[in-house]
Length: 328
Image (cartoon, rainbow, N blue to C red; front, top):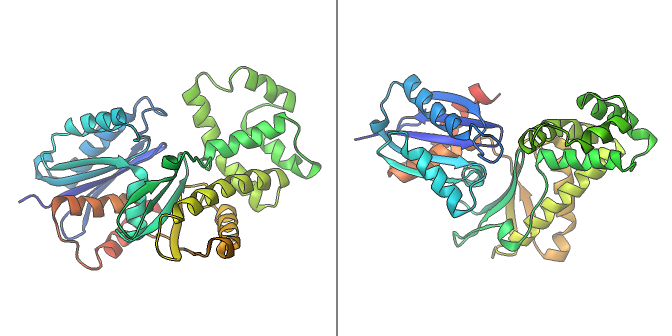
């Protein structure tokens, strides 16, 4: 009987592939480039290469894999799931294969099947809830989008600079932005923008995404422009969380934040502060929890479930301890 499982956390920047046995022992960990095909033209190669390398490191064959759960950024429509299914079919794995939006494995990592809301703000942005009745609902189902992804923070900051919406206190931050884009003045940055910022849209999004930490770090330093950008983004995340909370019966909602932007200290504090203010108007309280298990660990837990392998008490903690070696 096959007793090995594979978990994949495929984001816009990185694809992490982990192989584990039925006792929760990690056999391999591989990291490749992003797997969102809209952001990376090599997405398929990253997924297939990561799986092949992880299997080789673990010393097992594809037919020994009981289940694989792939959380992949950018999976929303039928044609995207069909693409992911086609990619996994090329692996040679005969066990159960599943591909979901990466928000779902982040939810499993945080709540392990329990009700709660997870908001992602990293390379991508999405808010997902699982209710007490085991119903899944996303903020985009309500026509809502929270621009908390790194590139959107950067876009907002750069656009504000180009529009002249800044004060003297912002000058050191503006100098950082100019240095990042390798220009010497706002006028040069304007000219660069008029030329498209980069050779193509994928490259432009990548550049803006990589600039994200400049914005969140500047907000921590109390830079007015960066604070305004982050406060605006945090407020959109709060709106999404509040809307999804209306689908719960309980008056106490657990939520978590994940992704490089939303987990920055400034953004966490901004979201917590705004949700706390809504306690009286909504009649609900919001409990922020931190997830020590990375999303790829959530993918492994899902894979055990797919394979029908009983997850022993303490397995999540065991996975967490082993994954620390690769994520810290």
